[in-house]
Amino acid sequence: MTEHKSFKRLVRARMNKTGESYTTARVMLLRAESSNGAGAPALKTSDEKIRARTGRGWEEWFAMLDAWGAADRPHREIARWVAARLDIHPLAWNAQAITASYELVRGLREVGEKDDGFAISASRTVAVPVERLYEAVVSESVRSDWLPDGRLSQRTATRPRSARFDWADGPTRVNVTFLDRGTGKSTVALEHRRLSDAAEAEAMKTYWRERLSVLKGALEG
Image (tube, rainbow, N blue to C red; front, top):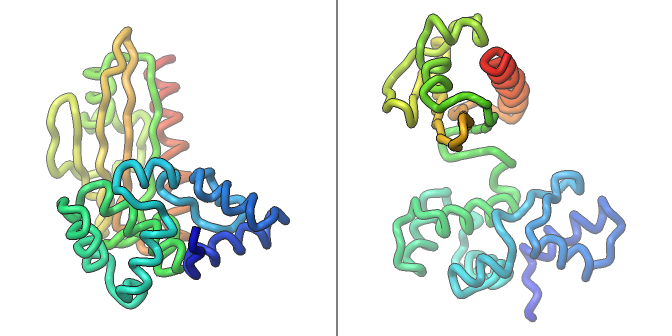
């Protein structure tokens, strides 16, 4: 299989951190196993799965994008180009996964960075019905039990599936979805978007994991 410069850089970054051979590092990355500990970003899915979904593997996609000059283009333009090759919408998962993986490999963005800033996510499964979990997040009076700083301002809500909020007085957004797991269990999944940089994203990730743990403890206790 032809080796392409962009993918080789990712393999070598892993080699430098782990001491693995080129072949081993390449196989591990094509499996899309987490490479965060190796100092290199993980691909969005395995080579096998992206090939099954799109007809091409990671090395082929990276070679095509390099040849087109994607390294000098913005995210939306890359996504539109990929989508045109697949005859899908630019926001479809395949287009976004290929674009994001390429940008990570080429150093065009950091892990967690989106078009509108950085984003983090956190979730918890709680042993209560989804209606009760929804109420605990959307009701301001109930929410104060686990989120006492009261920095969420509701924008929209669809009971009992989702809610969107402004965060404090800044430009960031908090989107929350709820999933009924049956047998008295449900999951809350939260995404905080438009964060300014990686440091703020890391701080908010820690914050929301702690807050959702408090929420879980309060409802289950």
